[in-house]
Length: 163
Image (cartoon, rainbow, N blue to C red; front, side, top):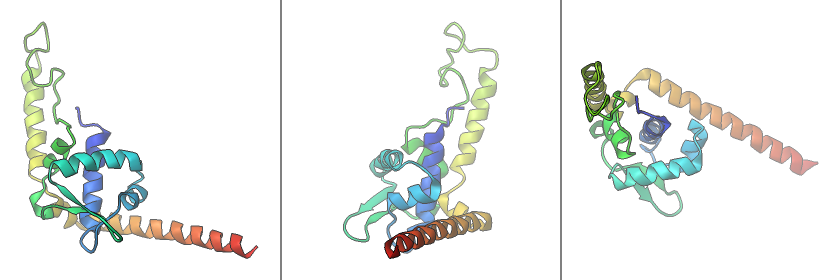
């Protein structure tokens, strides 16, 4: 399957954004911290997502990113395609030239599976994922983990200042 970390990270970042931007724009630094994704990698992904019209940048204090559409209008497949990923399980990129410029013995099998996966991802939206209790629980846990780390860092900083 040609779904690499680029596609996975893009979906993860967009789900984080959908969860947190309901109140205010979200910075890429915040997403990077919660999802343990490199900030520079997120910048590349969000550049593509912005060009695809999925996110909007908000400048100034309190700025960041927000979804350009309702979460119920963005399919997981849309996100993957926006970052130039393909859901293709064939070795020939669905060109049917896998063996001496001809289809291989299992070409139709992998093509059919690719269509099934694509249809599955087309049928799931960010909004549907946000509605899942387990997704909201994980997002809340991540928020709590980050808050706890920040509290310890602040406490350490204060302790160092008092010495």
